[in-house]
Image (cartoon, rainbow, N blue to C red; front, side, top):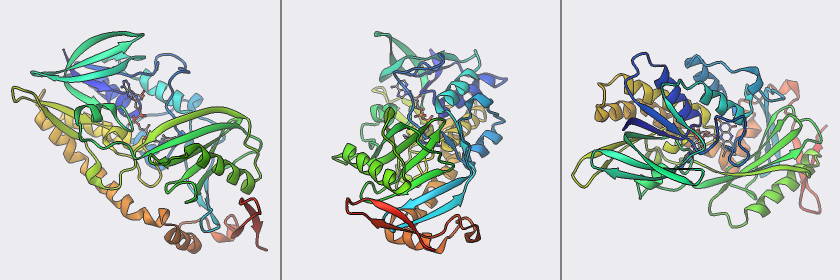
Length: 395
Ligand SMILES: Cc1cc2nc3c(=O)[nH]c(=O)nc-3n(C[C@H](O)[C@H](O)[C@H](O)COP(=O)(O)OP(=O)(O)OC[C@H]3O[C@@H](n4cnc5c(N)ncnc54)[C@H](O)[C@@H]3O)c2cc1C
């Protein structure tokens, strides 16, 4: 019987397992399971679709955790600017932002490798079922088509957007409302910045472009209700090709993934107790995107994954052993900061996602790069006969 079962070894799960494994008191017998082969240099069957940008908040969390990154994780180029294209209002603006451009699969493997041997690691294995029993959880794992069962006192769901754990245990749990399509193309020219695209003909969220060595990632987050996602993606590609003078045609890879977008802090779920038939309460904690914690304005989630895992670890080590009621209460209390942060971002959201308000904000140049640099000189996007936008710079 394990004390803790962590489901998912993305940044949230792997960081929690690392912290528990390094704890000098090491009070919890812990196991971490992930369907990706994170112990291998790569896994072509399953990857985590991601833009691989470490935001200033994520960098802050890495600093707080005393985590450094080996240089092989860094991707190329590193850039210092966000170029924002607002096709609704025909405006573009540049903002100075310090992101780290990383190789997400290498980043996850690095975090996984930091987990001490004191935590049992089970990669390449899917959590198939989770059942509440009298006094413990029973979990069915499937590895190479063979299934077996393990037991744990407490489950930590760190299985990302549209969390299986959350949906399986809490039947009323909401499903993710957005999903992304991300394609990688041969780079025909350099993109020395992160590009964010706002266009309500494509999505009410946003789309992005990031250079990764000799490839360019083009991605968009679409509502799950979207009936023609591939048509929307093709329209996006046509528009950015026409506007930026690119030729994104030679496709290297296609990825799809759910994205959490929490519109109300009440949609966040960090802790839960499931009642068993004999009236016992089995504890469950959710960390990272499984809890809904991700920026509702940028979809940035790595900082939240690191933060929630640190908060859970603190709650674990600052409560008496196996007192899961206290542990979960301590974790919930710490997560108030995240609720407030997401509530604030939700209030800020119309400034980015309501086309008219965004137009006003962008015209004022609020927080944009100093206009004297002319980096954000106003551009006019005019529609060509084929319906695309083309760039015309005012003198
Ligand atoms: C296209 C896209 C681009 C993004 N770009 C960025 C970005 O540039 N910067 C940023 O900060 N955030 C970005 N995000 C968000 C970010 O990827 C997530 O918020 C972050 O990965 C959350 O970390 P996590 O550990 O909570 O979950 P995840 O990283 O999703 O990890 C969950 C883990 O659980 C495993 N798992 C799931 N189900 C099971 C199961 N049943 N059995 C076993 N294992 C399971 C998965 O294999 C995975 O390893 C992006 C998201 C998407 C979809």
